[in-house]
Image (cartoon, rainbow, N blue to C red; front, side, top):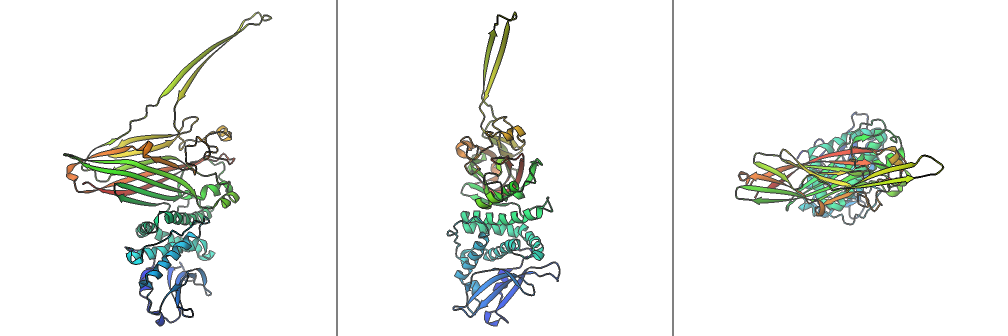
Length: 500
């Protein structure tokens, strides 16, 4: 698969002559050229050290000024004069883990990476792409944090386009499968922290700046399960609505920006072959959405508005559509539209008073009517559009019943210390988890969509498009501000199943 214009690091290493034939003990390749010949470029070098026993090599990234500025150096790796680096399994594994750990170390949230283990390189499919992508990711992070100011912007702008190409997106998904879920979460937080830092810096002069790859998603299909994982820095999500009050509050802005959206969508599918048709049933297993911090509590308290100010999920919408609909006969959903219970109580009272000094009899009459409606904070709906089945969750204001994502609280409500959105992560009546996320599981939301498909499709592999939107809203929690906003993320993945 083509790697865009990013150099083939693996091929370069593989084609190097034995170290004994190098003119000097160092050889290098350009990984990010400068737009003009007068500016330095980023280079990747390999240095062979013979003074140590056993001999070793190390990789470095440096800016090739007249006096080179080294931005990153790997740990020494055992080597021989026969240039057997790419054939020594232990050496390759150490190099890959070295790069991954160095990227993870840029996150101020230090978690144990003792669980970070990779398969033997010989068992990794497309190892060449994995090695090249890791050097691409490392160059991107290094450019943001370490590159000198006069070349930094050009380096970032050059490397960010490599991340947007199909090769990089496909290879990143392969890498995430290799390192496992725990390391994947750390990797995404570290990479999205780098993107957030870069965007915060540039948005001061360009408020409409877009992220190079604002969202990462991974789709898995198999064993009766469709799974989609999502990661997106909050700062890269589209602002759908906000008010101007508080936009210049730097402390609040820091707290809101330095978080990322993490989502998991798991759907069970079941295929049943009938005599004259095929039933394809897709049901909800888990839909999880969290807003996770990218920096530690100390930074959020010192530079931000505290650890309690962040967005919360306010709406989630999923559309499931077969991409080829020739054989689709019908589509059905499992839940009816809402028919809520409403309790109405009427209370009337008459009060009379008589005061002798006053010739007039004073009578006051009051009549009261009480209406009680049972309302859960989250409202779930299903619907059908053409051959698409949809799942929708809406968060509602527990006071006035309005949808949160499309409304904003009044200033009076923002001043009330007992409003539902105040202390929203510790209240017993919170509509979120303790961390501020949501979990919709099949115990309460195990709803489904059923497609009837003609039996001409037996044995075929059909594709379903899962298209979704997630809305995050900010209303003040403990911080005193009138600022509110809602952001939206759109994602799309294609999943497959065999009708058999």
